Image (cartoon, rainbow, N blue to C red; front, side, top):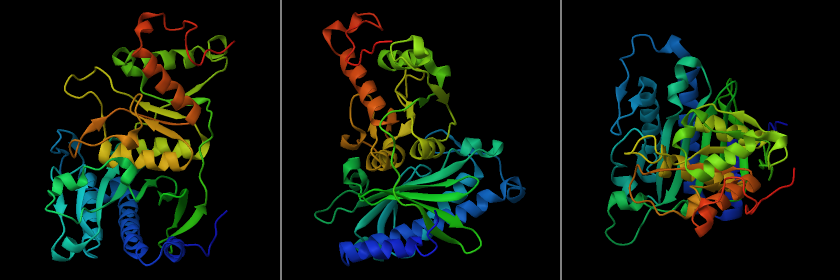
Length: 356
C-alpha cells in the first residue's frame, strides 16, 4: 500500500534522525542518485521516439556493445552526483578509469560505483532495464591511489540499490537495515515508499539461468539444474519453473517480489572470461540487497560480500536468491573439491539427499 506521506526524502530524513548528522551526506548522495534515475526513466520512457538520429552503437573499454542510451545514462549519473561534491570519485561500467570529482569532492567521505543502464541489450525489445549503484566510504588516511580506494569488499558498502524502468519506475535500496522499495509518481516526480520491508522466501520453486550455456557449466551447477529439471520424479521431489530475462535488475527484482534463485555461474564458454558479471557495480550491490532481504549470494562456494576485488572491472560468477537453494548450490561446489568428486551426479552421498 502506498504511504503518500512517506517520500524518499522524508524516509532519509527519518533515518538521519536515528543515525545522527553524519548520515546527512549519505542522504544527499541517495537523493542525487534518485534524481539521476528519474531522468534516465524519462529517457527510457520515450523509447524509439527519443532516439531518432542516434549514432550507431559503439564498444566500451571492455569490448562490449555500448548503446547511445548507455552513454546518456552514464552522463546523467556523473552530472547528478558531481555538483554536490558529496562523492570523491565515481566508477562506472562505461568508463575505464575512475572519474575524480573536483576540489570539493577531494574532501568527500564517499565513493560511488554504478552500472548506469543494466540490461541495455534489451532496449530494442522493450524489456525492463535498470540502473545499479553502490556507495562506499572513501579512504581518508594516507596517500591512497584512487583506483585502489575502490577495491573494497562488498561487506563495506554503506548503501546499495537499483532502479528498474518497467511498467512503473521503482527505486529499491538498502542502508544496511532492511530493503525498501519506492515507486515513482511521474506527475509529481517523487518516489513514494510502497514496499517497506522486502523479504526473499527461504525456499523456492523457480530458477533463472541461461540453459543454452549448459555445455560450459561446472559440474556443481549442472548437478543442481539437472535435479531441478527432473521435477517430482527426481531427487528434489518437486517441480520447478524456469525464468530468464537477461537483465540483472529485472531478475533480482522478480526474486525480491516473489522468490526464486538466479544463476550466472562461471563457465568455460570464453577462455578469456571465466564469468560475465562485474563484482564492484553489479554483484556487490545486488548481493548486499539480497542478504538484507534474507537471501544468500555466492560466487560458487564463496560469499560474494567477502571477496576482495583485484581490479575495477573484475568479473565473477554470481548465484543469489532463496537461502536454502543458494546453500545447496554452495554445498555442491564444496563437495566437488572432496576426494569423492568422481562419484555419480545423483549418488546418495549428497548433503541434501531427499526422498522422492
